[in-house]
Length: 135
Image 1: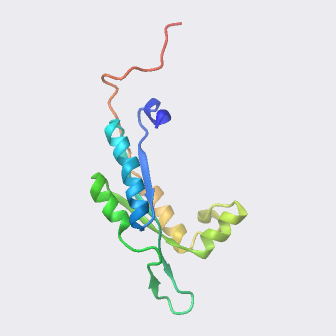
Image 2: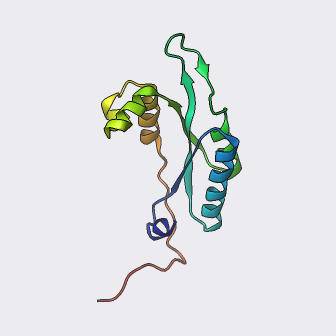
Image 3: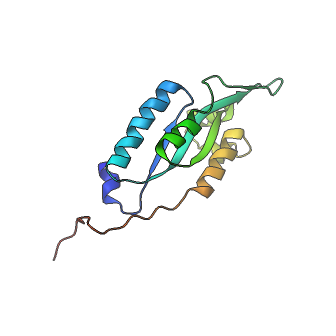
């Protein structure tokens, strides 16, 4: 949060999983940001669901709608729900972003869409001290 306070056009991206405990922790962090008058760009739900490789059935292993719940609690938009994806895990193990290694995978598609749609947040400099000095 200290770094964010120094960057006038930066904003929080709050990430959670669908689990209630994770949502509660992320909500506390989001509330700290709001209390410090730092903007929240939005909420991302990670590990949202998994599709069965055999039949395609969607399984909510960690629950569902945690990201939407958190977004509502913080008054921020839900920017995306990233599904559990074997391609994301494999590319992460290789140290290569999934959007590069497997751009067609479910997680990569959501992440690429999310990156394209990230809101631009502008904060006013009025009343803020800036780390500037006269030379």
